[in-house]
Amino acid sequence: MSMPHAPKPENRLDASVEMGTLNAFYGGLLTERQRQALRLYYEEDYSLGEIAEQLGCTRQSVHELIARSGEKLRAYEAAVGAAERMRAVEKRLEAAQILLQSLTRRDLPAEAQAEAAQALRLIEQTIEQEERDHGI
Image 1 (cartoon, rainbow, N blue to C red):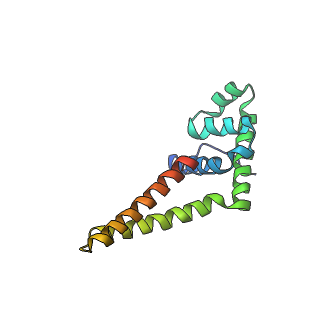
Image 2 (cartoon, rainbow, N blue to C red):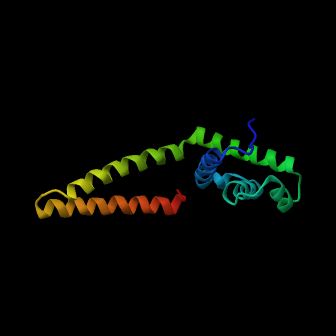
Image 3 (cartoon, rainbow, N blue to C red):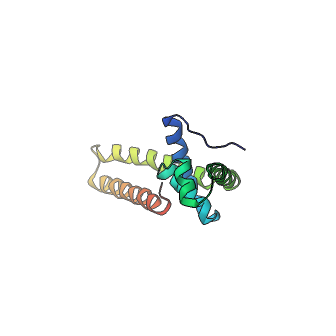
């Protein structure tokens, strides 16, 4: 089992983004204590000692709790794949958004421009809704 450690800033940032995304999808499957430890460590940037103080346990217990909780989230993602599918959908929506933005700048009939602008608004609304729903 891999254990969290004090990674380099870019690795810590990547881990924070990963855990935040996975927590948005699967956090409800964790216990309150697991969610709290992950939130304090990855979102609030608390040290293991600070978390141990908050939870009333040892640094080693926190270390193991964070590692096990992160592994659970990764296992859920490996089994279900919801976060990865969402990333793929976001990429396709962003590509469609770029194409539609390009169309709205071209010399097209007013009706075609209006339809392209409407489609662009729908994509933007979908992206915004997904960000609100999943915190991604």
